[in-house]
Length: 473
Image 1: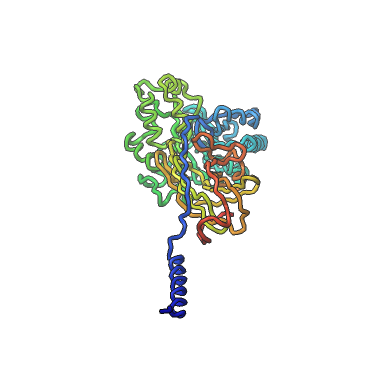
Image 2 (image 1 turned 120 degrees about the vertical axis):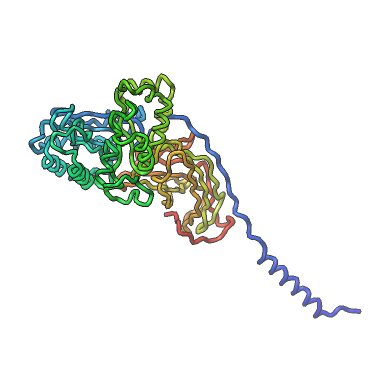
């Protein structure tokens, strides 16, 4: 018996239709990823706005800073320069133009050296010496305003100065340590140096000025207010149970206050010669505990040698050098192996902050695509994360899908991470980018950190077009 031609045709059509449905319902090809692990480095490395600093004192007749000399300090991992101006001669007069010219040259030298600086002005160099009346202080700060506003990109922070012996906000001969006068000087300093923190020697002084004993919280940190920019400094770290009067209320309670405050502020200063009641307070165990507890970012390299030499003898000096401020290190990363133009790059990066503190000034987090055959062609995207919240001891995860431009040339691309300065004037300068504490990834000429991964951009790569909120530019 012959088969009906109609039935055969219907069967073929049904099979074709079934095959079409199966094709449409099949699971899409999985986008392949690659996981990279990174090796930690124990190297003592240079990074901006952190670490040991060198202080240069200026007195009338002295010359300005020299950029070549400052650049040589980078060989000793020094990127932060302290500048103390001794201004006893000007207690009753305006700053002369010659001093303002020295300050301008200092700022230019720091810029040319790829460093940053802090400054402090001192009328008095010992207890009992006079400082200046409030009106004179305010006039001197007014004179500084043009210089500071035009150069605050290379100013890491400011130390309060002006008030009392050594500019440490004690022993004033003109009542500058009254709450009202301290507040006036602090706020005016903050006005002339935009966006930067101003360090105060005594936690109790900040509490008086802002009429609260509550520490900063994440909600008000970095909001630009005076309170969020009033930082702390300690010029007798570990030298006695109260750090020679730094703690005026209760030392342990004030340390807990600083522990919270300094999550969002630069903490630093110097040690000083231990007092008879210091005991073993300045030994390595206590030093490391308190540097960590209070998130120290910077410390004088040269004073006091008695304490610093003790750290060398007891074996913790290298750890202090490594961990002052932030120390970011990659742990692992998982990345797309390939993508189409207009498609998505998926990345999942884990890094850890091995330092005592986090960065305290604005900074970007950039992922960079660089064409392997044409390395001058790069695409970048700024991630939404803020490194100022990457606190010491914490692990950070950067997990994003990023749209690749539809018009990007096909080819092989390196993936890099860049943490540049937040100021546009410095963002493209390698000296001001953060070097990660891993082996074999740092590019000193660009300031980029290689993620040791290449992604192939191909028209035939798995995946499809993508319309994400993060896009390479």
